[in-house]
Image 1 (cartoon, helix red, strand yellow):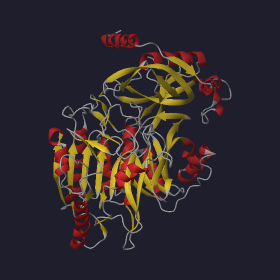
Image 2 (cartoon, one colour; image 1 turned 120 degrees about the vertical axis):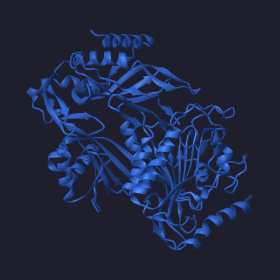
Image 3 (cartoon, helix red, strand yellow; image 1 turned 135 degrees about the vertical axis):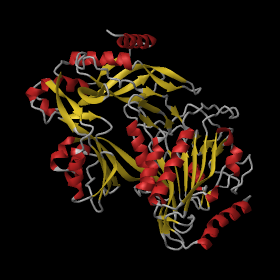
Image 4 (tube, chains in turn green, cyan; image 1 turned 45 degrees about the horizontal axis):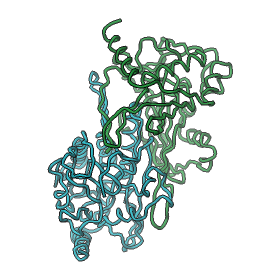
Length: 309
Length: 318
């Protein structure tokens, strides 16, 4: 083990000694997902495009940083019917007047409503390659009209091989007014390709939980907060409640190259010792061996402390 | 005091009418009055404020990207700062006495609270001013009009109008404190819109020094000017999308979100012209102050991106 890893191990140990290990509570939905994922009914999960026999392993995915193939295809497709504008490298803005989505089932059938939106706007082969993750609602208030909804932003994550790509460079956002009229859509897609490297993904629920537990105790034992006196301090994490799980690809840096490793993404609530509850998505390997020597943290990342203003 | 207010508002509204015909166009010049505070050690007790690290960077990013994009898209258009004050120069007195009405943009970056911003020595209410653009030290507050179209408070909670203790609640008729709504409405003396936050805002940065890639909270203003000037988006879409971009940038390292907000006017003026100042574009903005007469209504709008926080751990007094 070279010096770098000794330092890392010491750092991990030191940070673990500072605070107690948080309680990890796996919710019923999460448990059910993890139990089923190794059974033959994986089609019920979000692994639609994966052959069941292949569910025991998954390929690591690499990014071709120089290729623009996917975006060029998108640009070509949308240019036929929409005004397309490249607002950043690999980010397209798409607009057109009088495109209207049916939002009548938004409250009762959120996922179905989002699916219909995708069918209306996206190329057929991409309809199943996005998953709705959240909806931002625009609200206004005026003295005469009171509170009303002015518009929505639908946030979709990209799916690759049926897994959610946990990246800020792959997404779809659709903005509409309150009646469902398209304001614009923005799409960002990297050129992803399967590498020959394979990761085992068929560990049982005990190994999944143990892996998550060890990650939580090392990386999530405390969170930096600002206290009542304006001082920054670390607040102990008392409990991590996992509500749901998704099969995902997590961003890892191998040297300076970005790779996506198969992982499990846990939507959680974190209880801090000051009684605050926060939402948190925890990305973890399937097993303690899944990612080998690769560190989940981006190597060489420096950061400043967040301050509320 | 009332007479001073009436004279100020009348001047703001009437003077430009003689100068140009009312129409929707690109501003003839872009002047910015900008203020930023990082060092709060001069703030008088009992205020309890932590120093900030990036307010000046936020201000610089706003000014530089705005000017460079205006120059690139509208060659020959005059861009300049009327005020560019930071820290010990950005006092309550300096802000209070600044003649802001000749600037298309007024920009403040620093600590804030509901309808308050904090300068380096004292907080001020964003309304309840002295009724003039030149305010005595003890009265604070400003009215925004004249050539000022857009006021930007890059600070926490300035446009939050919820009742005390309910800052985090989704906007509803029950949770609105109408007196706070009026406090914001009252500063409109011709200005078109005010941008701010319904939630806490924050500053942060992270990056990879090896790769030279950094993500910074001041990128918000780079995104904003790009959308507003370069891409020709509306003022609200520009601000909302820029805020969402920053939340996306920080998604992997920061658990928080942002709730950008806009105070704006919508309806028909006395001349029967329809305005929705949240939809104004830089190249299609009304070239006159907009008054609250006719059927014009005052609106406050916001959207949540990610999971914003609403309770500051500092106090900036009343």
